[in-house]
Length: 182
Length: 230
Image (cartoon, rainbow over all chains, first blue to last red; front, side, top):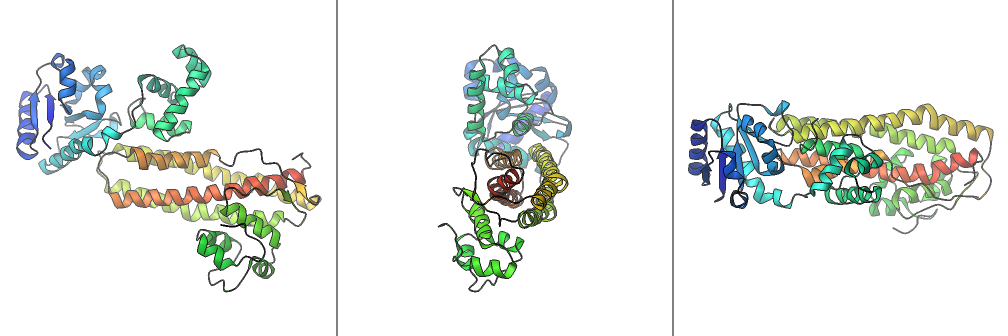
């Protein structure tokens, strides 16, 4: 794999254990991050292919992690049922073989697909969030202070990028990707 | 395929477009069609041959828009056909997708929540399709049959095609297909995911083809029987 990963966890021992696992078994270079401010440097964004954290850190630093959710992995003693559907979660209560397999899949996903995943612009995400919340075009235009024609253009672009046209389909997509909560 | 007429052989139609077998089955015609043509098959099944050819053309050809409907177009025939189509969705295709989806979710790691969300979306589409089927049975079909019992379509009634063929069920099935093809993430059983995808594509294609029959033949018949301007 030979990619670089940043680990930011409250539990130092867990972070060290994870670092050791990734370096020995998956040949990944890991950097232990002491504080979120270290990640906020632009170089860190370019440098690190993935960020691994625990659920409390993720929730506390959601403003940082949410836009990077495609390359963030939450490793913790949690099951995914009651969490954000867009999160990449690895439940650390599982046997080591399962943990390793999931991490391998998630870390490989970047090379396989995520880079070609359709990317919505910030404004398109705003429009999608409002569509999924049940707003009609006029309300979206008023909320975002843009014209209805601009809303229609954003909707057209969203559909073209995602291949999803119906309001229901867009709503489920938004839930699956953490843009709105289910 | 060229426009189907009364002399077209059923074997040529099926060889060119195998999905046409579902149409033939709904008219009581089974495989082993021999030398039957549209005309001879219609005679055997007691269907108007022009009407049968019109239905086959609308089903198979996206660009086919019948220009006229005739007095011999039978409301009972098209209602019987669409009721069999609805039964096919209700008792075969929807349970088939449901079964495949169930296997896919049960064989995939619980970490993959996308599948559960996509299954919820499928449930919504399924309910909408079942609602449409119920509406056909309670309202559309009885109204059409009652109208034809009271009045006759005028010869060469012209059809203007203004309404789009797609409906929201078709749109949502397209969206579900996109979710599988473009957006599916995480760990899952590839064979089972493919089985779900193909069964959804099959349902969507059948609905698209039959929406053409509903919108290009059935609706104009209803309007003509109700004396609505075309």
